[in-house]
Image (cartoon, rainbow, N blue to C red):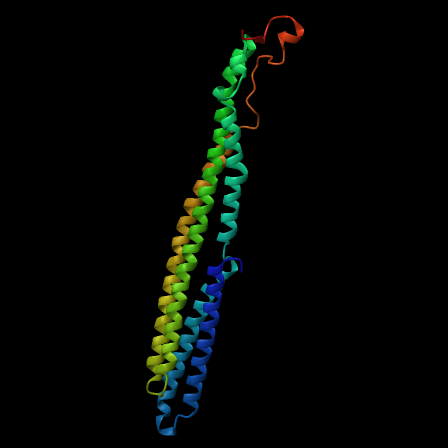
Length: 254
Protein backbone atom coordinates (compact mmCIF):
# COMPACT_ATOMS: atom_id res chain seq x y z
CA UNK A 1 0.00 0.00 0.00
CA UNK A 2 1.17 3.46 -0.89
CA UNK A 3 0.65 5.22 2.41
CA UNK A 4 2.41 4.30 5.67
CA UNK A 5 -0.75 4.93 7.73
CA UNK A 6 -2.73 2.52 5.55
CA UNK A 7 0.01 -0.08 5.92
CA UNK A 8 0.05 0.37 9.70
CA UNK A 9 -3.71 -0.09 9.74
CA UNK A 10 -3.34 -3.27 7.67
CA UNK A 11 -0.78 -4.56 10.18
CA UNK A 12 -3.21 -3.82 13.02
CA UNK A 13 -5.98 -5.76 11.32
CA UNK A 14 -3.62 -8.75 10.99
CA UNK A 15 -2.90 -8.43 14.72
CA UNK A 16 -6.63 -8.35 15.46
CA UNK A 17 -7.22 -11.38 13.28
CA UNK A 18 -4.57 -13.35 15.15
CA UNK A 19 -5.99 -12.25 18.51
CA UNK A 20 -9.54 -13.21 17.54
CA UNK A 21 -8.41 -16.62 16.30
CA UNK A 22 -6.51 -17.09 19.54
CA UNK A 23 -9.60 -16.16 21.55
CA UNK A 24 -11.71 -18.67 19.62
CA UNK A 25 -9.18 -21.41 20.26
CA UNK A 26 -9.08 -20.65 23.99
CA UNK A 27 -12.87 -20.74 24.29
CA UNK A 28 -13.20 -23.92 22.21
CA UNK A 29 -10.61 -25.63 24.35
CA UNK A 30 -12.31 -24.55 27.56
CA UNK A 31 -15.70 -25.78 26.38
CA UNK A 32 -14.26 -29.13 25.36
CA UNK A 33 -13.22 -29.71 29.00
CA UNK A 34 -16.51 -28.72 30.63
CA UNK A 35 -17.68 -31.52 32.94
CA UNK A 36 -21.23 -32.78 32.72
CA UNK A 37 -22.39 -31.08 35.90
CA UNK A 38 -21.44 -27.67 34.35
CA UNK A 39 -22.89 -28.37 30.91
CA UNK A 40 -25.69 -25.84 31.52
CA UNK A 41 -23.03 -23.13 31.16
CA UNK A 42 -22.07 -24.17 27.65
CA UNK A 43 -25.21 -23.15 25.75
CA UNK A 44 -25.23 -19.50 26.93
CA UNK A 45 -21.55 -19.23 26.01
CA UNK A 46 -22.23 -20.64 22.57
CA UNK A 47 -25.07 -18.17 22.00
CA UNK A 48 -22.81 -15.33 23.10
CA UNK A 49 -20.10 -16.53 20.73
CA UNK A 50 -22.59 -16.58 17.84
CA UNK A 51 -23.63 -13.01 18.61
CA UNK A 52 -19.98 -12.01 18.82
CA UNK A 53 -19.31 -13.66 15.46
CA UNK A 54 -22.06 -11.54 13.89
CA UNK A 55 -20.61 -8.39 15.45
CA UNK A 56 -17.18 -9.28 14.15
CA UNK A 57 -18.59 -9.74 10.64
CA UNK A 58 -19.91 -6.19 10.84
CA UNK A 59 -16.50 -5.01 12.00
CA UNK A 60 -14.69 -6.71 9.12
CA UNK A 61 -17.23 -5.43 6.60
CA UNK A 62 -16.55 -1.87 7.77
CA UNK A 63 -12.78 -2.34 7.69
CA UNK A 64 -12.77 -4.01 4.29
CA UNK A 65 -14.73 -1.13 2.78
CA UNK A 66 -12.01 1.23 3.95
CA UNK A 67 -9.25 -0.85 2.39
CA UNK A 68 -11.10 -1.14 -0.91
CA UNK A 69 -10.80 2.65 -1.40
CA UNK A 70 -8.00 3.73 0.93
CA UNK A 71 -7.09 6.94 -0.90
CA UNK A 72 -3.49 7.99 -1.45
CA UNK A 73 -2.50 11.11 0.47
CA UNK A 74 1.15 10.79 -0.59
CA UNK A 75 0.20 10.88 -4.28
CA UNK A 76 -2.13 13.83 -3.68
CA UNK A 77 0.72 15.78 -2.11
CA UNK A 78 2.99 14.92 -5.04
CA UNK A 79 0.39 16.28 -7.45
CA UNK A 80 -0.12 19.39 -5.31
CA UNK A 81 3.62 20.05 -5.45
CA UNK A 82 3.48 19.72 -9.23
CA UNK A 83 0.80 22.40 -9.35
CA UNK A 84 3.12 24.66 -7.38
CA UNK A 85 6.45 23.81 -9.01
CA UNK A 86 5.39 23.10 -12.59
CA UNK A 87 2.58 25.65 -12.92
CA UNK A 88 2.44 28.37 -10.25
CA UNK A 89 6.16 29.10 -9.94
CA UNK A 90 7.05 29.33 -13.67
CA UNK A 91 3.83 31.21 -14.46
CA UNK A 92 4.63 33.61 -11.63
CA UNK A 93 8.10 34.14 -13.08
CA UNK A 94 6.65 34.96 -16.49
CA UNK A 95 4.09 37.29 -14.93
CA UNK A 96 6.92 39.07 -13.17
CA UNK A 97 8.63 39.65 -16.51
CA UNK A 98 5.51 40.86 -18.31
CA UNK A 99 5.09 44.18 -16.55
CA UNK A 100 5.31 47.73 -17.81
CA UNK A 101 8.18 48.38 -15.44
CA UNK A 102 10.03 45.31 -16.61
CA UNK A 103 9.75 45.90 -20.35
CA UNK A 104 11.66 48.34 -22.54
CA UNK A 105 8.91 48.82 -25.14
CA UNK A 106 7.20 51.60 -23.23
CA UNK A 107 10.52 53.40 -22.76
CA UNK A 108 12.11 53.01 -26.21
CA UNK A 109 9.00 53.28 -28.42
CA UNK A 110 6.10 55.66 -28.89
CA UNK A 111 3.11 56.05 -31.15
CA UNK A 112 -0.30 54.27 -31.47
CA UNK A 113 1.15 50.76 -31.42
CA UNK A 114 3.27 51.54 -28.38
CA UNK A 115 0.23 52.92 -26.54
CA UNK A 116 -1.83 49.86 -27.51
CA UNK A 117 0.93 47.61 -26.24
CA UNK A 118 1.06 49.48 -22.92
CA UNK A 119 -2.67 48.95 -22.52
CA UNK A 120 -2.32 45.25 -23.35
CA UNK A 121 0.48 44.32 -20.93
CA UNK A 122 -1.50 44.74 -17.67
CA UNK A 123 -4.24 42.43 -18.97
CA UNK A 124 -1.69 39.78 -19.86
CA UNK A 125 -0.02 40.16 -16.48
CA UNK A 126 -3.41 39.86 -14.79
CA UNK A 127 -4.21 36.71 -16.75
CA UNK A 128 -0.93 35.06 -15.79
CA UNK A 129 -1.37 35.96 -12.13
CA UNK A 130 -4.87 34.51 -12.29
CA UNK A 131 -3.45 31.19 -13.50
CA UNK A 132 -0.83 31.29 -10.76
CA UNK A 133 -3.47 31.91 -8.10
CA UNK A 134 -5.61 29.06 -9.41
CA UNK A 135 -2.64 26.72 -9.33
CA UNK A 136 -1.93 27.62 -5.71
CA UNK A 137 -5.59 27.18 -4.79
CA UNK A 138 -5.54 23.76 -6.44
CA UNK A 139 -2.44 22.91 -4.46
CA UNK A 140 -4.16 23.92 -1.22
CA UNK A 141 -7.29 21.93 -2.06
CA UNK A 142 -5.30 18.77 -2.82
CA UNK A 143 -3.28 19.16 0.38
CA UNK A 144 -6.50 19.58 2.36
CA UNK A 145 -7.84 16.37 0.84
CA UNK A 146 -4.60 14.55 1.69
CA UNK A 147 -4.82 15.80 5.29
CA UNK A 148 -8.42 14.57 5.54
CA UNK A 149 -7.45 11.10 4.34
CA UNK A 150 -4.56 10.93 6.81
CA UNK A 151 -6.85 12.08 9.63
CA UNK A 152 -9.26 9.26 8.79
CA UNK A 153 -6.54 6.62 8.85
CA UNK A 154 -5.14 7.99 12.11
CA UNK A 155 -8.61 7.65 13.63
CA UNK A 156 -8.84 4.12 12.22
CA UNK A 157 -5.49 3.23 13.78
CA UNK A 158 -6.79 4.38 17.17
CA UNK A 159 -9.94 2.30 16.68
CA UNK A 160 -7.94 -0.78 15.74
CA UNK A 161 -5.61 -0.25 18.69
CA UNK A 162 -8.60 -0.24 21.03
CA UNK A 163 -9.72 -3.52 19.54
CA UNK A 164 -6.29 -5.09 19.91
CA UNK A 165 -6.13 -4.17 23.60
CA UNK A 166 -9.64 -5.52 24.17
CA UNK A 167 -8.93 -8.77 22.36
CA UNK A 168 -5.72 -9.41 24.28
CA UNK A 169 -7.46 -8.66 27.57
CA UNK A 170 -10.31 -11.01 26.64
CA UNK A 171 -7.91 -13.89 25.99
CA UNK A 172 -6.35 -13.32 29.41
CA UNK A 173 -9.79 -13.23 31.04
CA UNK A 174 -11.05 -16.40 29.37
CA UNK A 175 -9.19 -18.69 31.75
CA UNK A 176 -12.24 -20.55 33.08
CA UNK A 177 -15.74 -21.35 31.88
CA UNK A 178 -17.15 -19.05 34.54
CA UNK A 179 -14.99 -16.14 33.32
CA UNK A 180 -15.59 -16.76 29.62
CA UNK A 181 -18.87 -14.75 29.43
CA UNK A 182 -16.99 -11.75 30.83
CA UNK A 183 -14.27 -12.27 28.24
CA UNK A 184 -16.86 -12.40 25.45
CA UNK A 185 -18.44 -9.20 26.76
CA UNK A 186 -15.02 -7.54 26.87
CA UNK A 187 -14.17 -8.36 23.28
CA UNK A 188 -17.69 -7.45 22.13
CA UNK A 189 -17.32 -4.10 23.87
CA UNK A 190 -13.96 -3.49 22.20
CA UNK A 191 -15.50 -4.36 18.81
CA UNK A 192 -18.40 -1.97 19.42
CA UNK A 193 -16.09 0.89 20.39
CA UNK A 194 -13.88 0.22 17.38
CA UNK A 195 -16.82 0.13 14.97
CA UNK A 196 -18.15 3.35 16.48
CA UNK A 197 -14.82 5.13 16.08
CA UNK A 198 -14.43 3.95 12.50
CA UNK A 199 -17.99 4.99 11.63
CA UNK A 200 -17.37 8.43 13.12
CA UNK A 201 -14.19 8.70 11.08
CA UNK A 202 -16.04 7.78 7.89
CA UNK A 203 -18.72 10.40 8.58
CA UNK A 204 -16.09 13.07 9.24
CA UNK A 205 -14.23 12.16 6.04
CA UNK A 206 -17.40 12.19 3.95
CA UNK A 207 -18.32 15.58 5.38
CA UNK A 208 -14.94 16.99 4.46
CA UNK A 209 -15.11 15.41 1.00
CA UNK A 210 -18.24 17.49 0.40
CA UNK A 211 -16.20 20.60 1.22
CA UNK A 212 -13.41 19.51 -1.13
CA UNK A 213 -15.93 18.79 -3.89
CA UNK A 214 -17.29 22.32 -3.55
CA UNK A 215 -13.74 23.70 -3.73
CA UNK A 216 -12.98 21.70 -6.85
CA UNK A 217 -16.21 22.80 -8.53
CA UNK A 218 -15.36 26.44 -7.82
CA UNK A 219 -11.86 25.95 -9.23
CA UNK A 220 -13.22 24.32 -12.39
CA UNK A 221 -15.51 27.29 -12.89
CA UNK A 222 -12.59 29.70 -12.44
CA UNK A 223 -10.47 27.75 -14.92
CA UNK A 224 -13.32 27.88 -17.45
CA UNK A 225 -13.66 31.62 -16.88
CA UNK A 226 -10.01 32.12 -17.81
CA UNK A 227 -10.98 31.52 -21.40
CA UNK A 228 -9.03 29.77 -24.12
CA UNK A 229 -7.30 32.72 -25.80
CA UNK A 230 -4.30 34.84 -24.88
CA UNK A 231 -5.20 38.50 -24.56
CA UNK A 232 -4.37 40.24 -27.82
CA UNK A 233 -4.65 43.80 -29.10
CA UNK A 234 -6.96 44.78 -31.93
CA UNK A 235 -4.24 47.17 -33.09
CA UNK A 236 -1.68 46.00 -35.65
CA UNK A 237 1.42 45.83 -33.48
CA UNK A 238 3.48 44.37 -36.33
CA UNK A 239 3.40 47.52 -38.46
CA UNK A 240 6.90 48.78 -37.72
CA UNK A 241 7.36 52.28 -39.14
CA UNK A 242 11.12 52.08 -38.65
CA UNK A 243 11.32 49.46 -41.38
CA UNK A 244 8.44 50.37 -43.67
CA UNK A 245 8.66 54.13 -43.48
CA UNK A 246 4.93 54.88 -43.16
CA UNK A 247 5.36 56.56 -39.76
CA UNK A 248 2.09 55.18 -38.44
CA UNK A 249 2.53 52.81 -35.53
CA UNK A 250 5.91 52.26 -33.86
CA UNK A 251 8.29 55.18 -33.51
CA UNK A 252 11.56 55.36 -31.62
CA UNK A 253 11.16 57.41 -28.48
CA UNK A 254 13.80 60.13 -28.84
